[in-house]
Image (cartoon, rainbow, N blue to C red; front, side, top):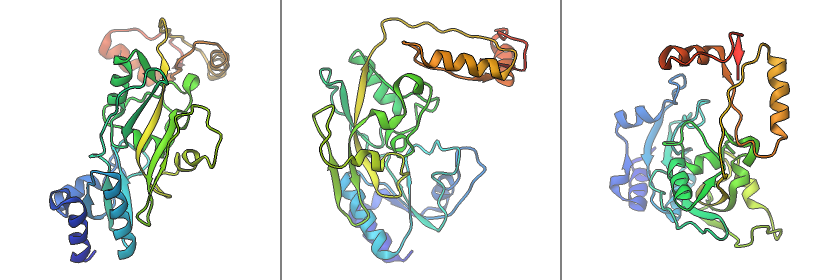
Length: 275
């Protein structure tokens, strides 16, 4: 990357939001597991959709590759750069709108952590349909880009089923706004379906309208032990088709043993696996 591109990026987002510090870049070029490592030339942190679009246009004109980073919770090297890339972080895109309790929706920036959306929904007497163990750091933009599933997929579906609208910055410097106040909108192209799950290859999601759901009237947690995998899968299929099931999670023998060791909670089954 030339000095000119660095200066251009600083002119777009401000000098304080562009860094070429090797120590900073080194920490950003390894994935959550530590197994995958890449190389980057600079980190840029735009604060608006227009800044994201301008950064993409500048990088395209300079022939520089871009890797988009959200909460960097990927376990499969999804945010690891490959070609001395420019790292584009969405961490400043954290605006959170008011919850619309009538239409059950909320508008948020792509860099908003999942836990923030969950807390906003809970405060309004609603629930957000997707939950992950990495909720405090996983961002909703990254979750939409990967069409994340998580613990509640059996009831609410993947992230794509929670997305009602999007703002997307494109490589040519334009920003696409796809929003509708109609819950069952069948007009025009389904752009949300095109960009959800595309992992940033078509554009960068900068903001989202997210669907919220009524809070269940009660909650019960059950732990079941199984002697073999076939029985476990069969039970899972039965639970899947029952009304009111919010989450199913597999806990293997190793996890059960750790739980018993640290919490003095005996596993529900002495079999090799339990659920």
